[in-house]
Amino acid sequence: MAASFKTNPIPLDELLKNCESGKIQLPDFQRSWVWHEDQIRSLIASISQAFPVGALMALETGGGVAEAFARRPIQGAAKGAESEHPAQLLLDGQQRMTSLYQTCWRKQPVETVTARKKRVSRWFYIDIAKALDPQTDREEAIVTIPKDKLVKENFDKDIKLDLSTREAEFEHMMFPATQVFDWDEWQDGLYEYWTARGQLESKLPVFRAFKDAVLQNFAKYNVPVISLSNDSSREAVCLVFEKVNTGGKPLDAFELLTAIYAAQGHTLRDDWLGARGEEGLEERLTKFGSGPKQSGVLEKLASTDFLQACALLHTKAERERAIAGEIVSDKLPAVRATRQSLLDLPLAAYLADRDRVASGFEAAVRLLRELYIYKAADLPYQAQIVALAAIMTDLGEKRENAEIKAKLTRWYWCGVFGELYGSASESRIAKDIVEVPAWLRGGPVPSTILDGVMRTDRLHSMRSRQSAAYKGVHALLMKAGARDFRSSERFEQTVFFDGAVDIHHIFPQAWCGKQGVEPRVYDSIINKTPLSDKTNRALGGRAPSIYLAGLEQGAGQQAKLTPEAVDDLLRSHHIDAAALRSDNFSAFMQAREQALLQLISAATGHTLYSTEVPEEGEDETDESGWAGEVAQEELESA
Image (tube, rainbow, N blue to C red; front, side, top):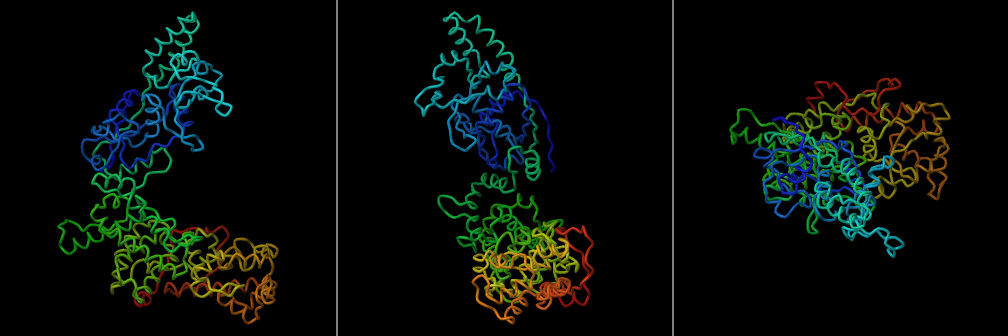
């Protein structure tokens, strides 16, 4: 169900009172309060001038989706607030309300941090004279004071400002922020203090002006509160929070599911991050296949990626149960990889699958290593590894079968070179978890293979490492046996990381520029190949004929190579040695284009043919997918 809402202005003091009592609480997916003292000063300054500080968003309780979430009181709320059943859960505005509650309502110093992240304990004051000075920025009038209310200097030897007594506050005309909603007692003390010193007539007008210009703004301040009804769906709550959240990192489904599971007594964060010194799933997976100086394929794996794989398996199992008649339903449940499918993932299903899914991701990494994909930056699609991990989980021990791995490899390259995961990846993944395991068990060819035909002129427009197919060519060359020009070593994992291997120009940029070759041509993947960092530096910007001669002569402390050995190294990169030795850029490009097309054809199982070079300006980073037709006999033999 979509979200329905209403907007009401609520007095600030009423909101703070409800925060203290526990009538307003936080859903447990909300992160901890993190504002530093300068942010708090700015917020108080804005309220003191009656400036708007943005609307709050809350979810009404009393049934519905709100009851699915674990909750907690505002940080620092009164003892017993946690036992109060809240009327509202604050979705957006936690940082602002917690800051105002701790500085202006609670009668204790605020535990916060400086802008440099140093933990401090502070009282907040308003300098009355500065607050009334129109030439002074209001933030300068908001003063932070240490916990002992002594501002010291000269390495804490001298006291610059002492506000440790109420009389000292009167003397310096420093108004405590904790009194902005209840100033009568402080005002009475001020009158007595200055009456005893015969200066009330000069001080009273100042305080009255301060009360009218500043304190009344707190007393009369209303905050717009957008209240979502309790019949809103979980997905609606997640989406609304993400759209309106003003506190930095957007919420994702992991935080919502954490709160949902917490209400059922399970701590999802402990599974992912670990607890009590134990290793969590994140650490287990992201370090898998990585060494001390390495980053692994799963380095960027998100908690939602993991949950997405779990949801795929759960929804597939539910569909299979419905087909078998174990679930009575008017229509078959859909296999899904959407945010809503994550939010609907039952705790029992997650607990049953989490270890299997972790092993599925590890199996996916092992296959990717065999394809010479070693790190996250070289992973063509983050989304496709979710599909691969889910498929590996579904297959179980059968995933180690050589024939199955060969088929999986073909499916993977079709997804990469068909550029099928750049958009609508959720529907593609949902298809894959159904179609690929069925195909591996003798069923029809999956749509990812049928759709995974690369447009043949695409090689010319692959210039950016953001392109999935560009990364795919890089890995395919290493998998096909490419060896480093200097060391003659294959790019196995240790060599890859120790040699800082990346994809580099074959005809150097500097040489191409001097010959008038346009960047759109020489920056193509056709003119690039994997090389170690040292080798790339050794080639420099020289013509190929010159740097090849240097390789033969043993330049840079390397062993000398025979011309035949150098030609063999070039062939391992699918490079025409004669064209390179003669610095014939055009002949080189034509020959290598054909060689790369054959390499991709062998990987995808599709026949590819060269076409004309695209016109200048064609997008080189489009990953939305390329349409291609496959002959009927090819489909039948797939």
